[in-house]
Length: 165
Image (tube, rainbow, N blue to C red):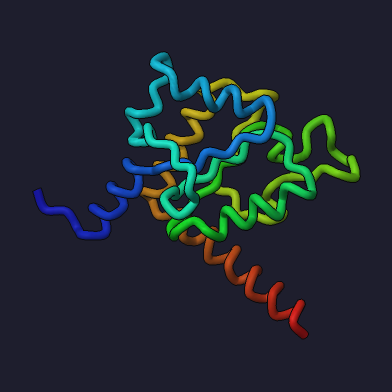
């Protein structure tokens, strides 16, 4: 069986994603449920939750993101090694949820992070998160992630340059 080297690298990335342990609200309970034997996240190579962002390559933002917490989330994201992926879990992380319009709530993590996959629901079921992980694996295999991150990095460079000027 002859496989291009890039195909081998993509297969390894797809099957060995390690999430950073990060839960903000009630969606985190659903994320914890995905680790038990009924849903068995270890069959996707994600049985090791990392407490250090330097050892993780996927961030699952689950729950309401406040303005004060946004800076900490961004710092953790910046400390993760490339390639890094983000899943926005739940309507609170995606759009602010029932707290939308509040002075202390960020209206979606995509305001400060490049989100790869969104999971709908309040709170989303563990099987919805499993489906999102499978969609992320599909995007990694088809190399759709790199295009989206290139656009995000270009925007980020322009933003940083405009702040310096």
